[in-house]
Amino acid sequence: MKRYFIASTLMLLGVLCNNAFAKVSVFACEPEWEALAQEIGGGNIKVFTATHAKQDPHHIRARPSFVSKIRRADLVICSGAGLEAGWLPVLMQKASARVQPGTDGYLMASDFVKILEIPNAVDRSMGDIHPEGNPHVHLNPHNILLVGQELLQRLNRIDAANAEFYNERFQNFSSRWQQAIVGWEKDAVPLKEQPVIVHHKSFIYLISWLNLKLVGSLEPRPGIPPTASHLESLLLKVKQGNPVNVIMRASYESAEASEWLSGQTGVPAVMMPYTVGGDNESTDLFSLFDRSISLLIQNTSGNK
Ligand SMILES: [Zn+2]
Image (cartoon, rainbow, N blue to C red; front, side):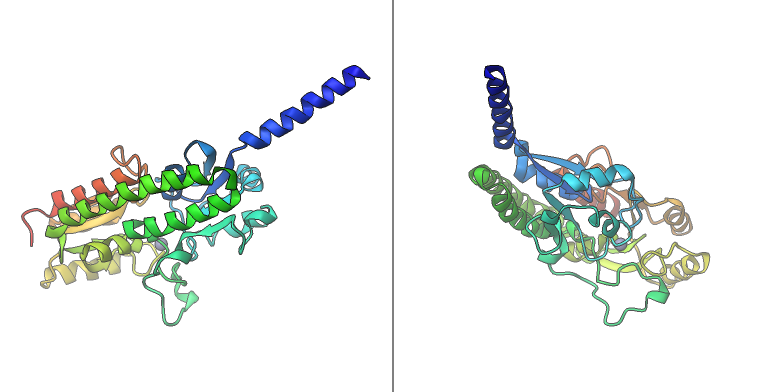
């Protein structure tokens, strides 16, 4: 009896300790949201990231291992606006009630920023994969801050015991981030009005933030791979007096189309990191923007 009592007391203590030190389990759809969660959550959260920078976030196979991760999640953080429409809904069916839409555990970044390129009418037969507007919201650093503010509120409610810890970390991140934005905006002044072509419209928020000029996309429509006839029409456009200074593609996109157009025009084709981990230099959110801006400046200097 005595032994039983000791055993159950130890078990109870174990449960109490576990709860006191349990980390908030975060399921991040993309590396940029993992990085933001780490900035604010630090050692009090444990993040699983479903995709890496070399994967196209529109098209991921929902692996069985994702199911066990999302089942345990206290918070799901994704871009939303349809970016994960091909794979997240099936996972959400297996997720717990605490991360379903409308709860603190369900955070879609695009719900907290201004969405660009919302179509007036959507014709899905045309294959456009941005029917809810452009979901690649993280490439404007002001959006990162807005999503960070919301993430802080969520963590404070999900794990109220550690609210002070999250508030401190957010204040620290926020002041460093706002300072970094001032620096980036200063460095990027020469990029204003620089004409660019993108592979996919994954850079629209960067383009709009830095006041670059979008001349065209290698994809005829978002999500439709480049075709020979569309590339020829872009080539003609450049030759007929529409200068282009950079052709940008994301780290997960094939180089073929941008290298072809570069070969025909002499315009540099540049692989941009797009997200954290997209190249060796982009190891966190700060270096992602440092690197993106320096790549654009390197490749456009001397042009205007
Ligand atoms: Zn897209």
